[in-house]
Image (tube, rainbow, N blue to C red; front, side, top):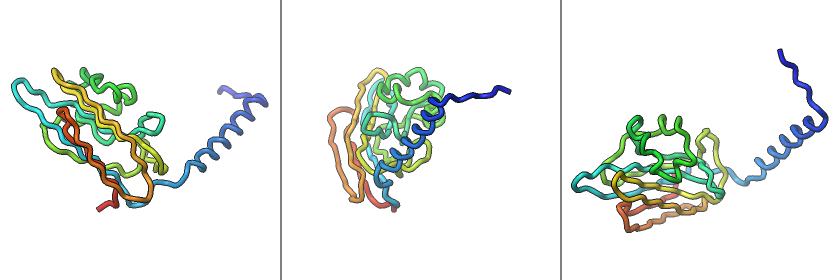
Length: 179
């Protein structure tokens, strides 16, 4: 059995680091309001000769651009791993293990809705504040599109709709009480 010896410096570094982390965690502000959710609806269209369904990642980032929660990932496990890097921003943040467990098959053109309940990928409640909602869209032999919009999560509900010009036609954000 290996014994660990701590110097005075390493002991204080650990104790002060833990106390500082606790203080920062408490100082983050109010927690996500109970019973609220953010619904992300998006519409894409396409079709035609040799049309392949797109890969889509819907996720939330914090103010620094770090991944907070993956809401949906339309990317076929196995076959889709080869093209996962087409989702450029999500590819740099997500893990291959998460991709294999979260992803589902690609979907045909249409409207889809996903909801965020205020939890991060580890199941912890996030604080109120600013977040970025991202819808990333990539299609083999087709376009790449990234929708990234800042939202302020607080006590007041809101609705916003963003018409877009590519194959990704529209993104709607609806922050409200769960139904």
